[in-house]
Amino acid sequence: MTPSTSVPAQWPDRYGDELYRFALSRVSDSDVAEELVQEAFLSALDGLATFRAEASERTWLFVILRRKIIDYYRRQARATHVGLDEISAEGPTEADFFVPKNGHWTSQQAPTSWLNADAALEQQELHDILQRCQKRLPAQQGAVFALRFIEELSAEEICQELGLSSANYWIIVHRAKLQLRRCLEKHGLGKD
Image (cartoon, rainbow, N blue to C red; front, side):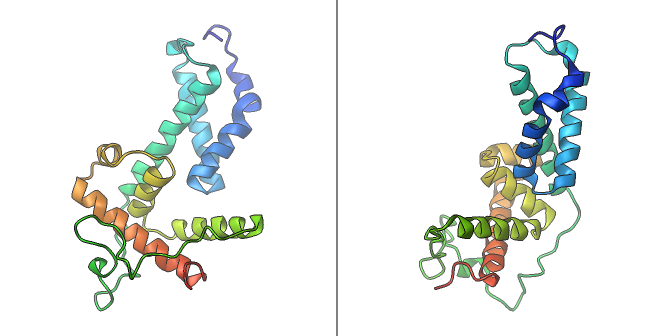
C-alpha cells in the first residue's frame, strides 16, 4: 500500500485491536495502552507523507507504536519518585543477594524454579501476580525492567534511551529484581 492508497480512517478498524493488545502486553495498563495506540495513529497520520511503503502499513504502525512505548518508559524513568521503601538500611544489602563480580544471584539466595506450574491456571496466576508486582516498582525501575525483559532491548540501548550510565543501569536492574522477588515471595511464589 502506498501513501496515496492508504486510508487512515480505516486504521482503527484494521489494526486497532491488534495494536492495543500489543501495547497492553507491554504496559499492563489499559488506559495507557489506549493512549499509546492513539499517539501511534496520530504520529502515523503526521508522517503519512513520508511513508515509502518499504514495509507493510501494519508493520509501519507497529514500529511507530513500539517507539511510543519506549518513549512512555523513558518518561516513566525520568519521574522524580525515588523510593526504596522495601529496602531498609537495617535489612540485607544487595551484596547479600548477588555475587559482586557478575551480578548473578548467590547460591543461597537463588530463586527456586517457578516452571513447575503444570496447569494453565497456575501460569495465568503467576503472570497476574508478576504484573501486579511490576506495577509496584518505582517508575525508573519499572521502565528499565520493562525495556530489558519485555521489550528485550540491550543494556546499551536502554542506557542510551534513558540517559543512564552502565553502572546506574545495573544498580537499577538489581534493585528491580530484589523488589520483584520480595513481592513474588509475599504472594507465596519461589519459596520451598
